[in-house]
Length: 238
Image (cartoon, rainbow, N blue to C red; front, side, top):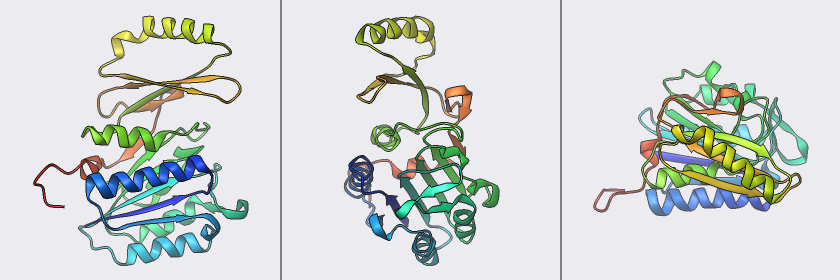
């Protein structure tokens, strides 16, 4: 059995990503046991209890997908009222889980999460939006869904270039393609961010186990469980 727990904020961009993930997993993958937690319930005392209740009903052969899309500091997840749930406390909760876990940490300083120091790496997989000293501009959940939808293990390589004008974007892309074309193995996706300064995010898909972000830092650790979240094949039991 696969169980999903999604923790998100009330801001539109967070909630949209969480609802998109829930819809994909329910409609295309066929997972029924999905719990979404958001808003005022997100305080540092209720989130561990929420996760503990889910973990308590898991069997050893089950799999837990834990997705977080919201703000975070280097200390942990930022919950309602600016309360912070320390990653160490989160690790204590997940240490009580005998099942395999895939964590999607879609927030700033995402690799700061310390779960894998406490829970054996053969039981836990982590997909993080960025390195521990980086900010995230969002979009990780959408990228994961897009790759899972075509039955592909999630393997991103991100480069973020601050650009001030359309002319710089064109020139920057020309230089980028000239130097990086030999490394492109499948496709390029671009997202123009309307915030100031104007930014362009470029993702290159690379072979498995070569997952990095700015500064050549890995954004994946632990066991790879992606194939469990690929869409159902026609005739396949749910």
